[in-house]
Amino acid sequence: MTTPSLRFLGAASTVSGSRHLLEVDGKRLLVDCGLFQGEKRLRLKNWEDFPVPPASIDAVVLTHAHLDHSGYLPRLVHGGFTGTIYATSPTTDLLSLLLYDSAKCQAEDAAYANKKGYSRHRPARPLYDEQDVSRTLRQLRPIDRETWFEPVAGIRCRGHDAGHMLGSCFLEMEVGNPPVRLVFSGDVGRFDAPLYHDPTPPPACDYLICESTYGDRDHRQDNPLAELAAVVNEAVQRGGMLLVASFAVGRAQQLVYLLRTLMGSGQIPALPIWVDSPMAVAATEVFRQHAGEHDFSEAKEAGVIASLTPGDVHLSRSAAESKAINAHDGPGVIIAASGMMNGGRILHHLKRRLPLPETTVLLAGFQAKGTRGRNLQEGAEYLRIHGRDIPVAAAIRQIDAFSGHADRREIARWLAPMPPPKRTFLVHGEPAAARGMAERLTERFQWKTHCPALGERVVLE
Image 1 (cartoon, rainbow, N blue to C red):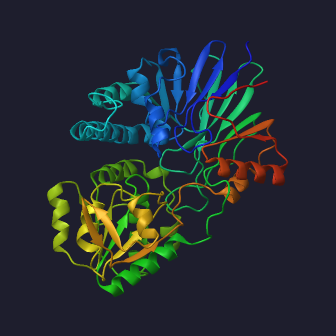
Image 2 (tube, rainbow, N blue to C red):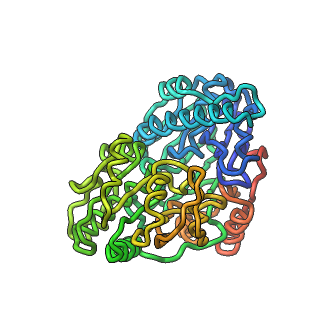
Image 3 (tube, one colour):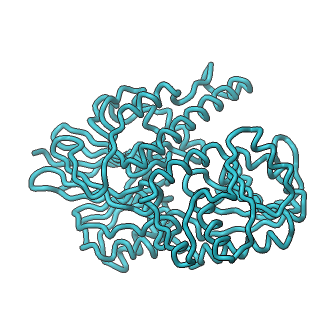
């Protein structure tokens, strides 16, 4: 047997573009296949030739459905990859939503670039199209957690619950004989997070590939249920609508569940709720189909029946249903994408209701620099929407307890039962975050750590 090697083709010194290539005895297994996102210099990497011919990759194994871990798949298939893509059943269901939506956004971006003439390419083209997505979905094969399978000859693999989102897992692998053991963390969720189970303790391994998104900081120790109740009750007292900018997959479902729990237990009054996002509506149906994945401990403790779509939630699919919400003045809750206010239906509600002092706007997730959400977070007096400066008279509130990523304290808690690996590689984090996580693991556990560079190859002795 040749000595196996690992190449870091993404999420090295950055958060997005997770792609880890495992090679042994002429076989190639790609762990995650994500899009580079964020700054333009990163997005342009999606257009570069893949570092190895896609046709030479035997299989792909995914940790979860988020696009920074899965969104490059149609481009890989377009380039000649014909192997099997392994993922949990909830992940395969979510991919059919996320990848088609991504293809639609690619097409819209290309059309806009052609209209404005700013693309370097003539004409501008999408990274991939719906036909590429259809081919990709035909190559998916669902797997069960806690069950060993062999994606390629000589590599055994099984997934464990990572607690990050519906269907997420971290991957345990055995390569060769005698086996070299690896653990790929994917994205690790938080302990006691609404709707999701705690991440499963990781098994012993020789090499650990671990995320470090928040490796240099700790989240505030807040109770999301109590924080949400306080914001809702304040919004009710103001008498207007509560606008929640939310990610359509995961965050919107958490919010509906917690609002239902708070109303059922009497902590907030009964209110109409609108989920105004076709993607969130479709994703909610996938969540309902996989009810066994959910942790409803908050509802159980409150003595109420858990539900993702109670009777007082209105699911707005069409543009007409979205516009009809304008007839309601509050109090009530509107949950709409996008989470950072980069686009989507939340912009139409902001245009109408930001100038009203009775409105409350809730930022329920991370707001990247340069986004409208960050501008509101930093106290903007006007918000530029569809070419107009909209005055901000609404109250702006934020809840940090909904983050889907474990912080450095929670990563250390997750890893505490694990015997020391030979080496730990810190990925999926900006340089300062990866270094911070490396320092924490070195100080607390005396582990040998390394922050790989993009493209770096290591031999797994």
